[in-house]
Image (cartoon, rainbow, N blue to C red):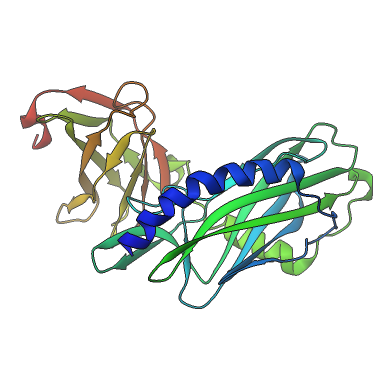
Length: 300
């Protein structure tokens, strides 16, 4: 698996450029409700429409259908994974597209660890139009990886038509269900509403370019088999967290090794966020990080 993912890194560098170019050049015929499937080896994707939100934004989804046992990756997949790349060029009357990520699975294979999704996946999309009253075309060129014991790159070119607001009818119930079901699995950023508090984190300098990130959180209800997924700017590599719970399972401490490479952007400690699973709801929170050179603070 590591070899397959390593080879994929070189392929994706060229593959990403191709997706960007294809987003400008590939011609697709937009349809309402759902685009045709775009098939690759071991996977296929399409866009599906799920109507509108109360605030007037459009709700849609990227639907993945993978061969049994194959997986693709979360937005921050881990050391060996490759996240999907999205290109919306060619869209019409679209001001912005926000991709929402449902809680990922923890994927292991020998020494390989990653976060992603097996078999089926819907990524919800929240879409803002430039002119809400006018029709819009959402066009996507996507590059992603699909893996079993090896990883291969895949692409997709799909498009749907979003009719003028005055002509919007009830969405297809199947597509609406799929998107809203996936949306319900997106980690919440409103941690107070689920009774969780996250303290400012500590980033402790070690020898060389190594750091240790200490994350502390409290919950009104007990955590069960929690996982902590840390992500941050380019150039920071995060190890597998060591998680300690107190006897009540309501006080969580996670220690994460951090390697700072020459590609690091900005000051270490900025732009780091954590996703914590195992509570009443999974949370997604930006971390306020204090950088210190005192190793004893790890155990305080």
